[in-house]
Length: 296
Ligand SMILES: NC(=O)c1ccc[n+]([C@@H]2O[C@H](COP(=O)([O-])OP(=O)(O)OC[C@H]3O[C@@H](n4cnc5c(N)ncnc54)[C@H](OP(=O)(O)O)[C@@H]3O)[C@@H](O)[C@H]2O)c1
Image (cartoon, rainbow, N blue to C red; front, side, top):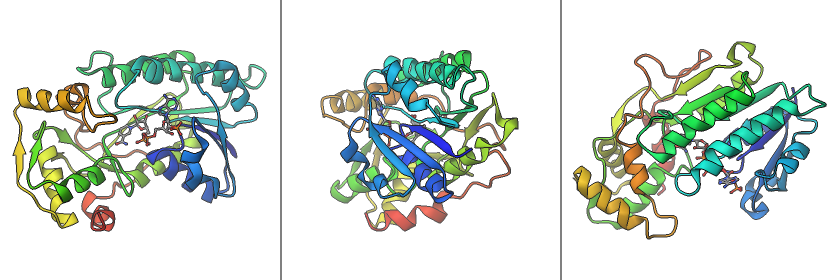
């Protein structure tokens, strides 16, 4: 297995995965909507970045020619969830299933989200759940990963809080009691890579979590301490959390929406004792985060 198509491979998780796979001599094809956003990956010797519309089924079929595996990573926190989280995985699964003169592509891996379910409280989680169902219907042997929030250099979570803490004298925090079990990006990459050639993972779904559960307030306080900008945190009640999120919806690419608040109403944690599959040991947040937050 050498040729891998990474759809959504130019983002935070995809870039880490691309670096790991390229380092192991895999040949990667990475479609993107804007090639200039993937400059950091074009320098990798076995990576081919191509501008393509992956929502177009003919394009998908072309991209899949000659691939041994497809990894589906596209995800959004706001926007058209039905198109991005449901229809796209379904198209990818159908294309993978009918590729290579109907013999199909041997491996399809898909990154969903922890707590994804068709009856979840937010559009994000419901669409991720519906995407899993659609993907599995078209490609039953697909392997699905459901990470909790992912941390690591370049994340959009702790790094964002660090930037906010740097300038804000006080942090009014929505959903302070929301629970997360953050998982290191390199651990998520390890799980994905381990499953590529592991036939026992066919058709399986793996929640991915770090070793410890934190409330959002604990994570923000920890980020402040480590980045050198500790600030008073004012936890907002639910009604004000929605009000703050509503106001942020008017900010282009703002950090929060009311749908995010609804996502945080359910714990983003793994079943007790379950963190990573394939005998992997999850790295603690405290062993990694100071290495990149201290410079923020
Ligand atoms: N980061 C986390 O904490 C976290 C936690 C749980 C689950 N996940 C899931 O993990 C996956 C990767 O997350 P990430 O943090 O790496 O995301 P990211 O950094 O935002 O990257 C998103 C990727 O999806 C592509 N993309 C976004 N919207 C698209 C659209 N409408 N059509 C086609 N491509 C589109 C982007 O490609 P271009 O912009 O190059 O076209 C990019 O490669 C997602 O499915 C996400 O839901 C992430």
